[in-house]
Image (cartoon, rainbow, N blue to C red; front, top):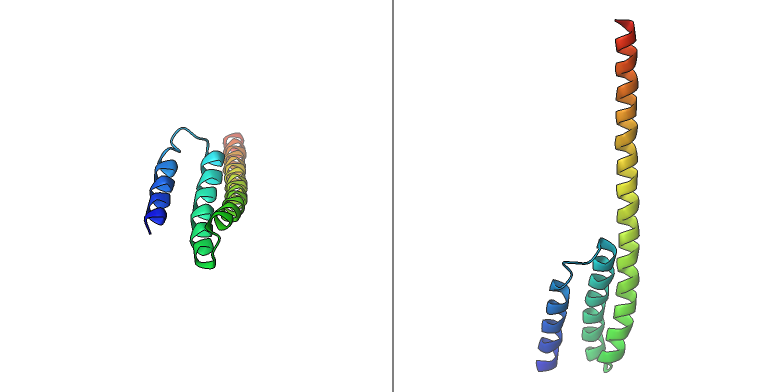
Length: 100
């Protein structure tokens, strides 16, 4: 039980040190830490916490990068839609000005 508490405390300290990282780095590290923690718990139940933590960290990192990629796509799409609306608004305003 003491080892699980120590591991949890270590994960907490590592996750609070993400302030100077990019969004991609934060998501990858967060995924790795969450995956390692979950893998260690599952591994402890089955007899191999180190292997569970390693597998969980790998899967968590991959998941964090997938989430980051999706977030970037959403932001790009949102920016493109906003630019398109602005362009349409300007064109409509230009037509109104010409008619007056």
